[in-house]
Image (cartoon, rainbow over all chains, first blue to last red; front, side, top):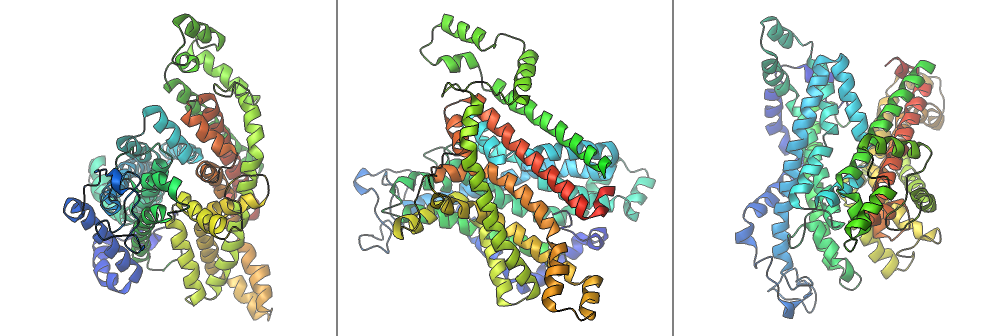
Length: 302
Length: 305
């Protein structure tokens, strides 16, 4: 993970501009990047336009219409294309609104953990010595904590909710940001333009924010995409276990938990939200992998 | 070498101490313990009695040191729910989780190393693409959902394996696949990139130039070096798997540590939660320490750091 960015590239002053122009040229050539971007854009649009796209109210219960199978079954109908759940709520509408929950949590968690991890990593890489030792210690301690278990225990203490899950995961998932920000900053610390800024007497925040940060942004964006995917999977896991997003919100993990009792006779109740989760995370990972290939011209030699 | 081992052990010990402080604070954060032990029907006098019985009337520092002293002697107090020693519960459940962890790791290694080697040797071929597809899908598959799907297909439809229970080895197959698949992508990618790197090294060219058979070059010279980081990663992954067992054991109803942790969390049985978090963290710390030392023995350059 540490050498996500090759030293030569990281040391390049125009990394960001190069990186952007390369992005345009290579997106078309890089199939996984294009595919990932396409799926994420569509899901993003679905999330934004959920109230207009959803055929029904995702919370409206209809006990007369419980467990209607999806359209490809003989007894299915197009009124509820993906069927209804055990409370008679339209599955497609719940799935569409669920996109919002997954994307929101994924992005906010990546922002919180990115802020924490980048701050720690940049400070450790820039100052080295004692600061680095303290950050490394925090990192080792954090890595020794089993994430799912700690998140579950804390969520049960505080009470599971969308806000709790987002904050907990944000506070837990900063490790990769810190590792990457640290090693990227370490390579920049003695770059000529950083030395020049120091010699000119630029204040420290200026050096870190204007000279260092833009030049490690490429690597951090790669980590951020992978961390969004990670957060979405963990939210689903916590919600599945009942300590995450609470009913009646249509979190995909929660939908799988609610469908679990019916899965032997009606497998689609877990197949549908599970596939949605799989496709979203797959798309984000493809995007992340594609971006990594762009920022490391040597190819896939992690 | 010994200086390296000593330094690493010291760091591992202090991390363990920090984790134990965090675990203890978990108990403190959980609110008034005497109230949760007593339950909703307890009278004020009963709660007071519980407070004295469990030593909850003492200062926090004193409670912490006595808890830590107990933990060092593997005594984690009593479970609120089961009313028995936490350590007895853990010892009873540990074999199941260990079996699951080791089987998952074995599956992950058996899939990832051969596949990674072949993918590196035949770079760009269809098998390389298959390997990449396995890696990408493995990372995107929510493991609880994958587990449920395995149950539907292999336990209910095909009836090859039982859906739940840890009485026979067959019961471990599906959960081990579900847990192992999650660890496979990282290990396969590392094997592949390690092999690619090693195959370009000078000593491989020398070995080939000497006229050694391709098989000898690959297995005796290249693989041995490429696999070092994979072994280290495997140790770390085993630690992650013990943590991840909480989900898989719940899905497959295995009576292991993970299920115990999950039951304890939903019943507010904090002494048990605390002990399991600490034990899994300690496993992870010990495993990474061993991996570090193993790496340093195999690759002397690492000792300098």
